[in-house]
Image (cartoon, rainbow, N blue to C red; front, side, top):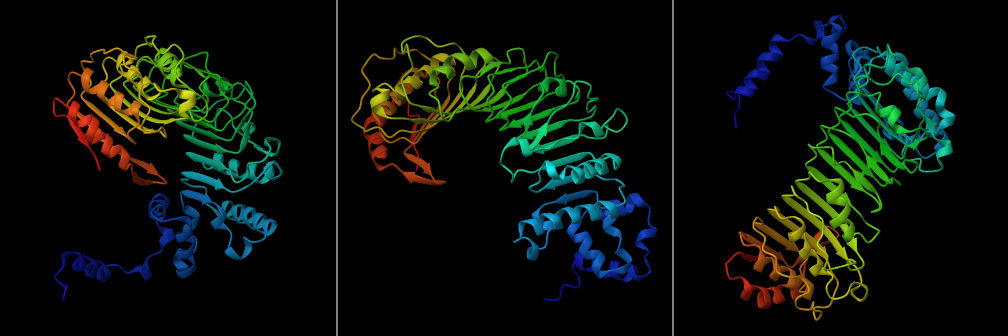
Length: 462
């Protein structure tokens, strides 16, 4: 079909007639214009472009984002570890030596390097400093060995004059050892520490980053307490995962989102964070359902949306005692795995009925559970006393296999949630990313739950 009348086609034809690339001296353009053009392509593309066009031979030296990883090394050199390492370091040194250093936005190094390469890495960081880079990424994560071989982040290279340009710092598999005299990063907004050996009290570093908004700390084994003597005024997002931390105690008046994954012995002391409305709490090893009902509402009292991932291996001690109250909780999402029924007892799943008592203003409840109990187990009658709930409107239970505790829990919700608009039961569960049908669960749901749906709110999914 003739597409000469297509507007886009006409535009391309017009441009080709009016543009004389052969007469254009690319390097005669203002440096900021060159930077904007080069910023639209990757560094590799800029290098390739320089190889096919003599006019653009040096265009790549203006590229604002310098990202180096294993692909920096030719495939022919990657099979030999020492040759690959030398080729990588030589390539980075060459690029930085030839680069203009103008309008640099990001310097990112993702490669296995250790403290023995400190001289080269220090030179790269110095280049980022002199080029006023906004973003610095040092990711040596392929190295997961002992921390004594870590490269130490060079705080000594920074001073009051050159540290103000850095806005994003991401460190992986390095050592962090700032002195108390460290000048700080006055404009740093994002800090990510992964598999980092933290040798000093982190608060001395955090308090010298007055604009910090996003803080992520993962797999830092020497971090036992996360605290600060003064408020972190700008902090909005906090993520602490897989650390041996015992206490998280911060005053962050603008903190809005908190994510935690690790052991359940941690103490959350974030009650003064009045804007903290969303939290994710994940426990994978220890038995911790009782902790959810006690320590979480104490440490995170202002939460409105809570996501919980956990394993239950025993029944709550003091099953009949009323839990603490989530006074502001509106949305609760739980991903829960139950252990052996012999350890748990028949009331294991029905323990979740306490959720309604613990969260009197809850509106939306979603429980995704894996429960391997036999269907014949039934909780004793009267274990949980009916307690009307006046705010729950939407409830969903996935992974329903017909377990007696699951049946009792759904019946409890149907009886007590007086404002319930929708009760969904899904007899499917996810395995290896695929939904697997629980045929027994579907039969039990239809035979034992449907007759108790007096208000017509029950839906069996799938």
